[in-house]
Each structure stands twice: as C-alpha cells, then as structure tokens.
Length: 166
View 1 (cartoon, helix red, strand yellow):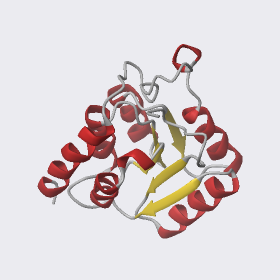
View 2: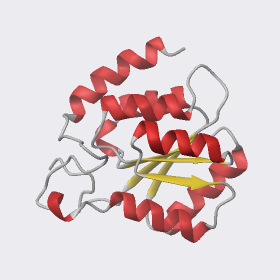
View 3: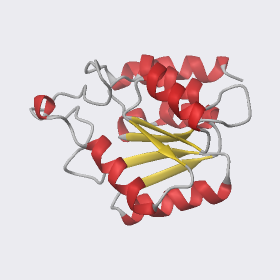
View 4: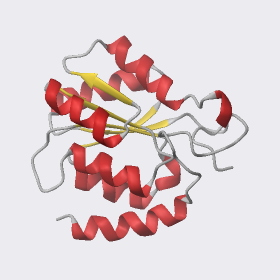
C-alpha cells in the first residue's frame, strides 16, 4: 500500500528543529494528537533518517532557520524534488522566512513561532488528510502537483544527497 497514511499504523511525523525546547514541545503535541514522532536537531540528520526509512514517514515538520550547510528551506526544497508526495510544514519566528517558504517551496503549511499546541495538531492532521481527488489510494497528495513517486527511489536519491550535504 503506497499511501501517505496507512491503516495498520499511526501516522509518523519527522520533527526537525535545532532548538531543544521547540523540538520537545512539537514532539509532545504531535504525540498527544496521536502521531508517532521522530525528532532530529538538523536537516542533514533528517535526510539521513529519511534514507533509513522513507516509507515510514508521513509528514515533515521543520524549522526554517537552522545552523549548518542545510537549513529548513533547503530541506523543504530537496523534499519537494525528491519526495513530492511527502507533506512538509515549515515553522519559524520570522515572517519573512515563512513567506519565502510558502511562495517558493509549495509547502503544505506554515507555522509561526510561538504557536499554540492546538494549532500545530490541527495543521498536522490537515496536512495528512488527502484531498478528495486523492482518496482512492493515490500517494501524491503531499504537495500541489505531487506524483506518486516511488519511496524506494527516494531512499536511493536521499542517500546521495545526504553524503553531499555535509
């Protein structure tokens, strides 16, 4: 079954934020909302995790501004190319960064920090819910214009990117 949410397991979110407090809060909120959560501190680690188990991740929630060679905007852009079926929500305390993400990257949601826990939970479930046209089992509902890309191909592609993005 190649749909973003599988009936045999809870939806799985990957939370990416360099701030321990925000990462912990987002993780707890999503867990209380019924999602399984993996949390990482940087975008490069997120790509490594996706390489290890891309078929297991249903949603990515990433901070926009993070230290290192690969920030949240770069991660979202890479995932837009490598995994267009994977919904991405970006979060930031910068209105400018959120605006760039919304316009340039085609993410499914933007979240301004600080955020109310209920807003995060509702945005996550909204991003995981396929549009009516995709409910027949189509895996490509993560982003506008997404196709049902092969998750095994994503694993091979992300593996190559993770080694380059050091």
